[in-house]
Length: 499
Image 1 (spheres, rainbow, N blue to C red):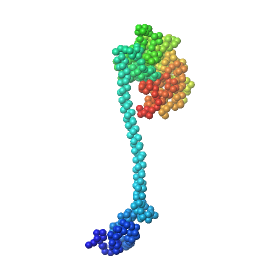
Image 2: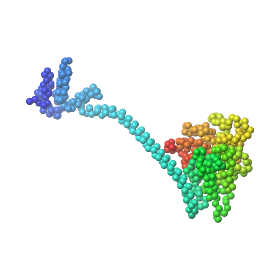
Image 3: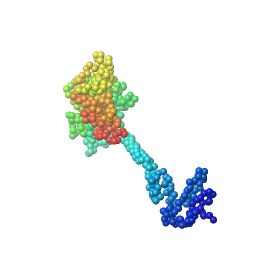
Image 4: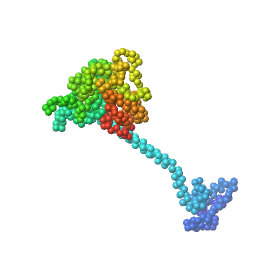
C-alpha cells in the first residue's frame, strides 16, 4: 500500500523523497522540529537541467512535488527570494530568518502603496470640513437676517404702540409732560426715503435720526408722498405723514400747565434729551418746482404760525424745532427771492463748493456739463427742473458766494457720481483729498455736508466710508440702515462681508 505522502511514480522521472535517501519520514519531521538548520543541510533537492524537449513536462511534474516535501517556512523563504522587492544580497539572511525578513519588507511596501491615498485624505477632509462650516455659518447669517427683517418692523411698530398706549392711559408717577422721546439720543443721521419705513417719521425718531426725507408730488393741489407715482395713495400725504404728527409731537414737548403757565422763549425740539436739536425735514420736489413751491409754502403755515420753523429774518438765522430744506426740483430763485424772511432753505450742490482742488484732475463733471448748451445764452432765470442744486439757476450768476448760510442749509452731492466707487474696498488718497476739499468749501460757507448714494455693500466697506466721512467732518450721514448708523459701532467684522 502506497504512502499518502508519496507522489505516484512517473516513468522517466526521478523524484527525490525522504524514502529515497533511506531516511524515515518521521525522523525527518522530528529533526525538522529539533534542528531546522541541520535538516536543511541534510535534505537538498537536486533538480536536473531538463532537456529541451522535456522541459515543460519535467517542470510540471517536479514543481508541486518539491513544494510538498519542503517545510512551510522554507516555502516562504523561496517566495521571498524570488520577490521583486528583495535585493540579491539578502538571500543568506532570508534563509536564516525568513519570517522576520518578510515581515520587515511587507509593511514598507504597504506604506508606499497607501502613502498617496493618506495624503489625499489629509488634504481633502480638512478642506471639505472648512467649506461645510462656511456653509453653516452663511446659513445662520442668512437665517438671522431674515428674522431681523421681520423683527425690526415689529420693534418700530411696538414703539408707536407704546406711545399710543401711554396716551390713552394718561400719565402716572413715572411720566412727565415731555417724555415722548425720553430715552432717545439724537444722532447725526438722515433717514433716506423715510416714507419707506414701517412707520414714517416715528421710526426715524425712535432710532435717533435728526433728519427725515419726503418725496412730494403735486396733484390736484395736494402733496402726495412716495418714491414714484405708482406708490401714491390718497392717505399718504405730506400733511398726514409728517406735518400733522410733527405739530402733535411739538405740542407735547412745549406744554402749558399750572406749574409751567408760559411757553419757553426757546421752544423745545422733538428730542427730550436734547431740546435744542432741530429736526431737518428734507422735502424733495418731484414735480415742477415753481408749481410745487406755492403748495409747500401754504401747507407749512401751521408750523410757521406756531414758531416751529427755523427761519432767516434778514440778518440772522433763528433756529427752530423744525428746519425745512428743499431739494430735487426746488427752485433756488424762489428760495432766495425774499431777502427779509425765508423758512425754506436750499440744498446746494456740494461739488461746486470745493476749495483749492483741481476738479479736472479726477475727471469730474463741471457745472457746464449739467447745464444745456443753449441755456448760457438765456437772459432770464431758468425754469427748467434740472435736479438737486441746479433748478432755478442762471449759469452766469453762479459765484463763490451764491450759496451760503442765509439761503442754504445742506450742501449735498451723489457720492457715486462725485467721489466714485472705491474699487479697492477702501478710499484712495485722491478720493479723500476731494472729500476734504468739498467739506472745507461747504463749511467755509456755513453749510452742512451730506453725501447720498453711498455704497451699502459689503458692510465693511460701508462702515469704512462712514468712518472716513465722520472723521473728515461730514455733518450728517445719509443712511438706509438706521439701527447700524445710530449705534455708531462701525468697526469691521467678519460677518459684514456676508450681508
